[in-house]
Image 1 (cartoon, rainbow, N blue to C red):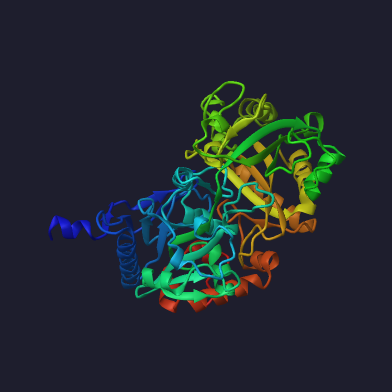
Image 2 (spheres, rainbow, N blue to C red):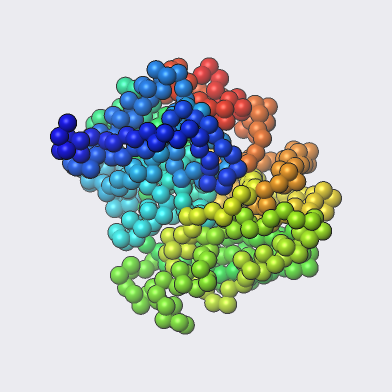
Length: 527
């Protein structure tokens, strides 16, 4: 084969690696093959993308021949085993093509007033950080993201990565189309019928089957890697915004409790005055909340011209991009999970003092606003050791009831070597979306990895059930869910998800995209 022929074809390399460890080093997974997959280096971008689609179909055929599972690996950020397989693991981080949309390919019925200006088509391996950077260059931005941006767009979507945009929602809220390879000879362009986006010509350009179906789309939106190989994701973007971030200690009193349970901020004093914050988060040291209150993180945004340096310069210091330079080497994206790797197990009696020092060092009050785009404020792409983390979603009206239950458990069954936090997020329509209430409070427990932490997580789950607190669990973090738990938490949504999976994947392909994580929750019926 000539160099020109080789450059026009995808490159697949078997690394020889026989095990894989996730980024937070909470487990090691044996496997049969670990492949790196590259796009062709030459040719039209769409042709290169389509050639890689063919390579993915070949990998599915190989998995069927070898009778093993297959998983697309993103950033490896998940603490759960959603991306794990003992079969074929495919590194997708090298697949980062990025497309603007041709106006002729956008459906006339598409209702976003910005139309093609808003739409971007991202190949699965684009990291969230890459998306921020590429969009910034085009004067656009993501509507929300998680605190840590080492995830790929497909991986972050598949496990429900969220953030704290109270009226905009999580990544799943702005994904409007999916290109999924569902078998060795079939791939589909899938979008909701209730929100038409692309014409059939776009699917034809991909060589994909064109499907508009609400039930299939909403089931595949948060797929837990079980609906095939997500090759491309269509997102809606916003004009570029400048964010102003504040963090201040506030009392955990009746007005604060009302704000946390209603997202009505009229009874508390926030840095933006009467303006509604774009982002709202509460950090809690479980050992001093009664005396010291909670740390409240708010963000506000306004449109900026990305080429107008004056509008993006801190008025006090003259620093450009002050979010990057203001924090002594840390960014606000270094959330509790990223930094608590430094908290090691020690004598239980010392835990309260360790957490106090940790909170003071990592989450001090801001003396002036932190300024930056979303990608500059949430720019972390590294982890710092073995940590334990679980997250639960509850209806917003249960926010303080759930927090009070956690604080009581810490007194009676602690100490928990970590901190609690609550982020507030608009819900989404994903069938198994865990941010499932119109306004969802995401409760995060981030701490040192230990038997005590894991036992505390189990106790929290039992307590929420015993006290009748509706809840779900973050698919990318630690939980122990069996079929009975899924029926209790999601009801008929489980059957809807399974029905859609059977409709989209034939039996042989369902077997390829099954793993122990799905089997343990009963999400492989008739696989």
